[in-house]
Image 1 (cartoon, rainbow, N blue to C red):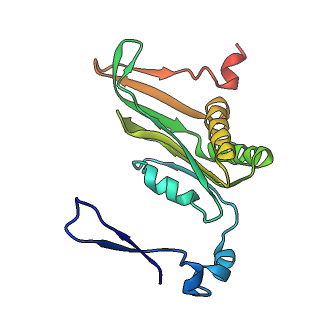
Image 2 (cartoon, rainbow, N blue to C red):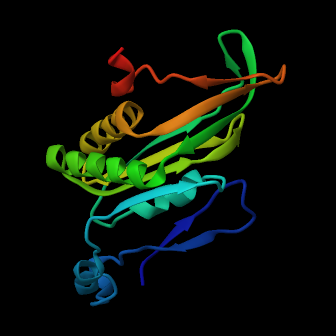
Image 3 (cartoon, rainbow, N blue to C red):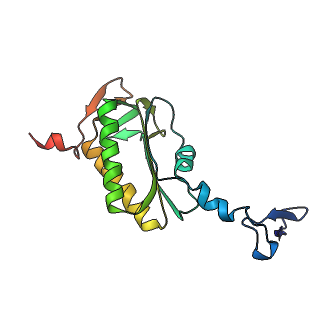
Length: 189
């Protein structure tokens, strides 16, 4: 099997790493070759609404594919201020069956516009403290342009069409439900 020797002044000894896939002269048929296509999964849409803390790494791993050279992410986090008020957390509510259906439509629209492999949309419900993720969106594709454009479309469309409500909780023990300016039903006034 091929290996790569790495010598560095920060290491007291040489470190030996295995190369995968093996070089052609190693001649290890079946290690990755034929099984690569057999194991390749079909495109997936992963949609999650949860009260649990979101892990960017876990969501990213959901969309990894050996046929993709790009994984693009959007991570929306709770910031500590809004219009001069100190925010301590956000609280999200959703009508989950309708929210899931709307996100599924968004995923379908993405697949009509861009050649993407996997899409993951994970949104937090309940209290989300400052710096924690409220939403993590991950999209994989063969090349970066498709996944980058798709991620932007997903977050913009999610904010405009998905029934998720956000309340800001402030340090002075007040709160305010936020009107989403992008949401289509707020423009009907």
